[in-house]
Length: 190
Picture 1 (cartoon, rainbow, N blue to C red):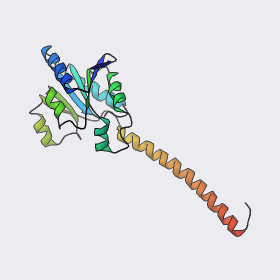
Picture 2 (spheres, helix red, strand yellow; picture 1 turned 90 degrees about the horizontal axis):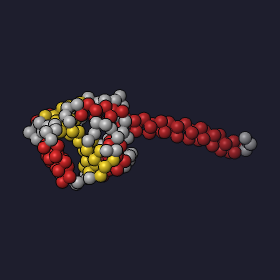
Picture 3 (cartoon, rainbow, N blue to C red; picture 1 turned 30 degrees about the vertical axis):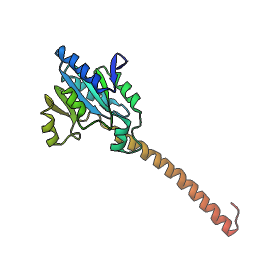
């Protein structure tokens, strides 16, 4: 386990199990939430702070770069996994950050931790999955988004802005080039 900003980071599920055992000995209520946490923003910070209110120890499962690429495409994540892991340690509410590898079986981290409370968003799990998770966890709490714009939406806005600039520049250059070619064909000088 490495440390950053007084918080722990691990990529080893055995270390997670040991950490959870220590927290349970201290009778600490364990909260787990998971996600990509790409381009960490105010919504992520608010979400983690709210999640922490459900217990004493907040563990964050962070999707690996490979896991995100498989789910969201080759242009994601924007921020590499090591930076995403470290960024989360700078949030006061976070106690342990765990990397979730693509090769990990479904819900493995949840099954290892067996959190008192699993925090998720509406889009994370279906009603049927929540029923199954309630058998592993103490309870599942669904939180609303904590920011107006998600990371994916912010990326789309950046892409759209860039596309408009490119379109504008290309359109002006294309018009100018067409005018020059027409003048040349007519034998005129511009």
